[in-house]
Image (cartoon, rainbow, N blue to C red; front, side):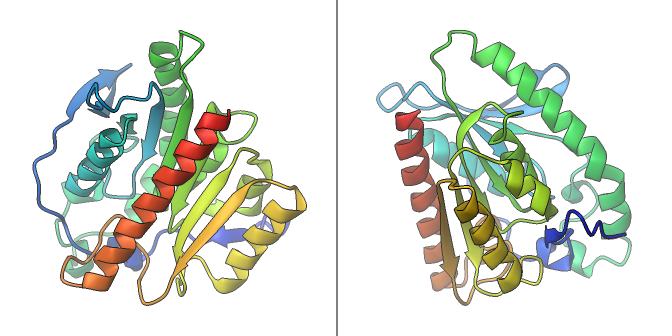
Amino acid sequence: MTDIHDPVLAKPADLCCLKGDFHNGEPTGSIIQIEGVDTYVAKPDAKVVNGNVLLFFPDAFGLHINSKLMMDAYAACGYLTLGVDYFLGDGVTKYSTSPLNDPNFDLGAWTAKHLHPSEEIGRQWVKNVKAKYGNDGKTKFGCVGYCWGARFVLEQLSDDGICVAGAIAHPSFVNESHVQKSKAPIAFSVPATDKLFSNESRTRVIEICTEKQQRFNMQIFSHVGHGFASRTRLTDPYEVWAKEQHFKAFIEWLDFWIAQA
């Protein structure tokens, strides 16, 4: 049931969240355990390390190849990048590598199973990450989230979070309250047409951020679909370009605002 006092801005995950390609490459990071939760760690080279930590909140596929390669890319820009497996090994790819065409995979049931548990796992994971990596009093935290990970970013930019700047691509499961509570600088990268994040919702996010004078940026791409930034169709040169532009924009946003914090 929809809460009329907390309108939905980005709708729950749908089949469009399962579209796109799996990418090729050899991840350079490693999996460690942080208080029992698998965490992908991508370390920056000593020549570029900036001393900051980037929290990576993945889409429904969890710590799959696309996410790992993106985390490696963030690390190559200087950030110690940490990705959380808030599905505890039960991401979509555990059941199917082609969920759109798999009659045995029930997205609704999978979503219901993980929606709230993933939030608590993610929240506790952030606390444990801060305890492990933020004790020196100098480390600054930023965050990025893709689809499922959007609301985790907004929480980390609120008074309850630890991040000084964040960025979100093609969100899902976001209500007005998530946006209202966020305070730190936030960037969005979204499709011009997205059934989960409508034009009206996009405008409402801009209104909210403007009204409370939050620093924000909204990057909008035409002719791409939901998931373009994390599950880019590699056969579409324009979509590949859009993915590269979103990444460049996120890095520039994080670099600027974390330096100001």
